[in-house]
Image 1 (cartoon, rainbow, N blue to C red):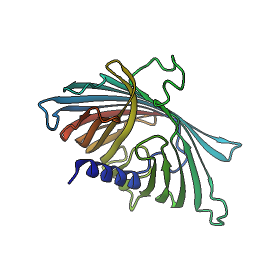
Image 2 (cartoon, rainbow, N blue to C red; image 1 turned 30 degrees about the vertical axis):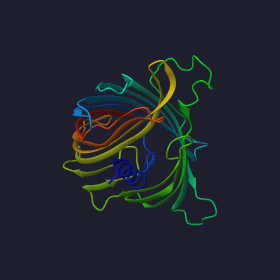
Image 3 (cartoon, rainbow, N blue to C red; image 1 turned 180 degrees about the vertical axis):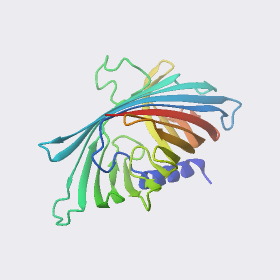
Length: 292
């Protein structure tokens, strides 16, 4: 079967099952620092290898307007170091910046107070350069995009929440993607958290320690420089899944370490000039979150 078709199907399944950006309750402000290293793996159809180290800083500020309307403002800063031995010319690093503005409110035209609407606007800047905006927006138009999503929330209780809607990503290869999410806690120990930026299934060992099965994906596009040619769009795709442990050190700090596999990987220029398809790889990750 065509590997590109497999990648698209798996990516679509994850988007449908795990929509990012929704979390129940009145969460506090958070600062998260995370790092993930994908160890060297072979590149399909060549003798080359590639390894990637990704670091991320995520800031989230939550407040209510007029004491009623919940609003989240987030800033996500990402950096990927790419070490590749391949004939395809790849950037040595990729940079991402995303500003998020989200709100939720009672669903209009519905008398049932268990239904809510959510809207997220996510201006995103993906490139291989720190220099933007030194040129005009026209010159860097492929680096700046504004995805957004709208969704309906059904909240039976804090232990059972359903989310459904659609994500729209202008200028991406897949522009419109349906999303469905679930938060379900059948008992005090087991939790399905499949409607957040950190999708996972967790089992509580103690009041402070969780075992986690995590899964995430990346299906991004970056505007990069290839040789003397600027403004080339590089598609970056990977899906990873693994197991880890999360520990709440105190009321402010919690940390997570995990390891697992990365599959359906692809780095491909949108103009079809070059493509790198790494083999399934192994990753380790660590994350620390401050809650205040």
